[in-house]
Image (cartoon, rainbow, N blue to C red; front, top):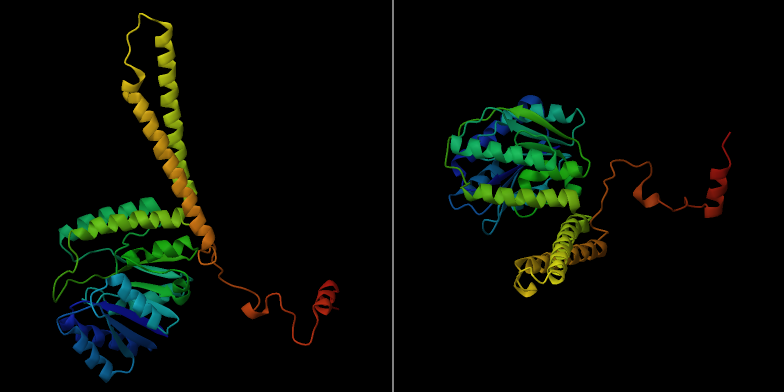
Length: 341
């Protein structure tokens, strides 16, 4: 089964047309699907439209938030409800074309765990296209995941991805990055992007500021989540070393001044270099302490912060370290030691 998760925020006019297109694509390609609409606090009648669609087709389900919680929360709620082996996300504004769904599934058959859409030709104003290209360039540089369009809402995932990747805040656009950090295979598919027919964009100028801050968070999580001391400790040691160097230079200059009575120098307590040295030492000590606190937190929750991802196994999880029924551990050991003929 393919689960299609669609977050909705004030998109009532587009929902019937979107549902009809999805239905036609599923029928023409023989797809077994379910469609999950997540109403993220709409105020325009979107929920009523979802209820009408669910009443006419048992494959349609809806969730309604009490208020607007954000796209990441809507997607997470949809993922929790999804029953399919594959999960496809798309926006509700009709700019994502449902006729691309079979192409995503065909690409997934090539062994990818995540296939991200690439709006190669965008039907948006330059005020969105320009900053988006800069943002995508920054994501590629900081994370090493070479996708052209991290902002595209149309993506397809294997269910196993969401057994390990958890969304919060506004990290929904970074799921391919988080998945790649866990070892999942991430691919890309150029798709058709259509002009907006109804409503208006839900994103303002603050989107790019928030996106940049989220990018820093993701870069830290994917690089140093299990070893925070490596980043804080490096900064701390560099600050301490620089502070000691400044202090040593100040000490040498003071001793030289003491040896030469004719030399005129500021009293030591009036020299700005002294305070710079002390400030660097204090800052370095704080960074090292923060790193140690981070390591303690990671050690406390090491069971939930797994540093690895298992794709396959030869035995069932319940069989590990347990002898088969009716056999003793000694007998099992003997059978392993004696080759069969």
